[in-house]
Image (cartoon, rainbow over all chains, first blue to last red):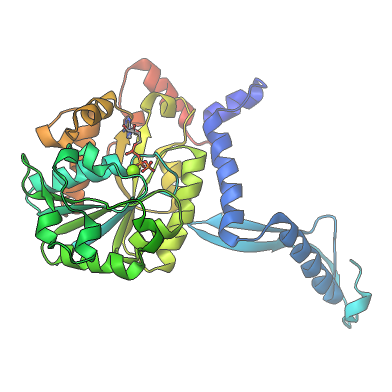
Length: 97
Length: 268
Ligand SMILES: Nc1ncnc2c1ncn2[C@@H]1O[C@H](COP(=O)(O)OP(=O)(O)OP(=O)(O)O)[C@@H](O)[C@H]1O
Ligand SMILES: [Mg+2]
């Protein structure tokens, strides 16, 4: 965020268009580069959460799986707060979605 | 060793042909024998920008068909004889030209010139693929606009899978005032997002249009116009000279500019 962005925000003004452009580009490029469409990404997110929650109890509301891009490298970043570990993993079918 | 450089962009109309013409003349003037190849067979324009449209007899098409020698098809620039154009053939070439054909033409040029610049068509279809197949290095041209940057990113990905190296960036049609007011992507935004080294920065300049009207690239007459200087600097950097890049949106321009620079300070 730049000083101008901050002042715009404080005054309730629309942010300068360059920072909007930057943010929109970063998002669209993360998807372009990974060639994953939003639906596929959502499906993968659900499945990852399913698998992980068989081993540990996770906070599903706080859980987040997203694509992040830096220096032309796109990474799949999962942030899954763990409530507690399970002593034995749940069977594949019984996992809470 | 000859250097073959693809000049491409993805998005159309961002300044590929203008860069090819000006860079070709600048390299030639600086002492490198240079060929420019119009690979935009569908919508050829490089001849026009160089003022050579009336001197075309044969084209790349006849060279490939071996109905003429390369020397016969090359159009040598009168004022800058170190520069030659190999014109694009008939638009129907698009239907049959293969990457092998393109490599053959470029191979012939590489035997005779220090630099071979390929003016690539817009898009990422066959025209681009053929031209990329014959190239070793690339210059990606973009403007500081979301659509151009996005398309440039696509093209960069394709170039990287073809192991084209180095890939360098020319940022064209920069409007310093809009940039200083943060109503245009900053130079660093574009270089960060695309993660390419910046080879040149060309401002929006009316003289580009004037020179196009005349068919005389800005670099031909040592024009001191901002774009002319920028194209010359791109040529010098390509030839290995260290020429610093000045960001025109950060140049001192009095109180207003100082204030707008302050406003650009990243606070977090
Ligand atoms: N720095 C500049 N300042 C002002 N006008 C410019 C600048 N660069 C390019 N132009 C103008 O932009 C237009 C498109 O330029 P040019 O034909 O070089 O683009 P291109 O990328 O080759 O297009 P195409 O994709 O159709 O081949 C032209 O009218 C040209 O004069
Ligand atoms: Mg063109």
